[in-house]
Image (cartoon, rainbow, N blue to C red; front, side, top):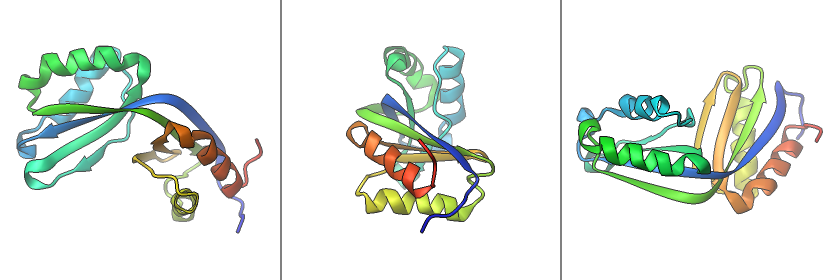
Length: 159
């Protein structure tokens, strides 16, 4: 069912890399400092962070642009001991779809329809993040256009 919404556009970005940082003890983790250090080095970290806190397997995931990957690895390796994480892993071949609008994230029907439609299209969402005016999802690069087109349709946005 199509409806009018506060959504204004759907944007997409290819060549995203998702980095996952793991901790032996999440209580001692300096998560904010990882993002601060990457930012100080000029690396734009996606504002979305997936946290998986499960005792000894605690980890966070965030995405960066492909061009920033070598520098991000250098920064992470150089700060590993001081920032308290035990490993950093990465996944390539991803894309980010961003839905922009007014108070988008605070409208449960918009958020729900985004995830419902992507599930219906059998598109796996790797991570998701949001703010008052946008929702971003990371998907496989091969699903980028399928996801974008499905969301244009679902949210009744003209291309």
